[in-house]
Length: 363
Image (tube, rainbow, N blue to C red; front, side, top):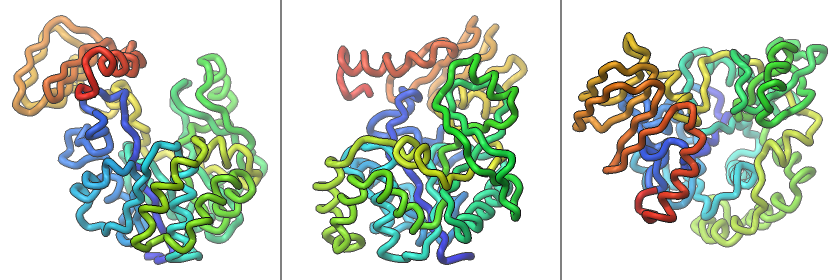
């Protein structure tokens, strides 16, 4: 295993669209949302053990989840947990990880990935990551993973690639032409028909020095903030420095801040059973179904004259459900949600309303 390979797992989100299971106190990445016996974070960590040594895997999360990370991943040390005192999107998180890893190994090649993705073809995923890591090690490229689209999904960003600029060692790896954030349906249909667009998986691979160079060029104000802490990384003073510095960072994603501006960006076209698991609807697609296309998590759920539903109940809860078609039914800690699948985008608003009218303890 290559000791210069490192991984940063981003695990700081709240996952409000999975309420009531995902709550501020325990977001979706820390939950066994698939009913497998492992949380999404634990599954992600295990996945990357095939890529790099365990001591080279870092978890970036909000400070309030530090103990949850330690509880779920007892094999990692304290210095492998990057605690963000405030939410500033992905660019500051990655800049922080860059400087921290650079102090340990300036020759590192790094993969950055979210903690809440579903990957059903694990071996193919490993193959893709290792190919991208090798390419990033030997080329001055910022690499992102693209997923072969199966439908004109408007919930994903899209990446257009250039068929004329292909990596000789892996013809799945091509130069990026454009990034497009979540398009309207008609545009998404055109993307599919054109054949040169991929879904943006939000997984990034690069040689550390190339990523740091890109930050200096495209996000110098963020880079300067983290550069000022060179003497603190991986020391007892790191936490205080980050607590003071992090809130000063611009709130910006790596996509907007770097990837869409840089000219040395490549995308590796992939198919490994991917979903970003952003909504109840996406979870429904990955769960086994009964004869009426109901996806059920829970030992004591009885369905009558119901179809196309996703039901998630605590193990000790008996639920009898009759006459529902295309609904989300989920209960956790005394909170029950019943919502049409087609209206799941309203769940964020439900959470806001509950917070205002019933109090923060419910969200």
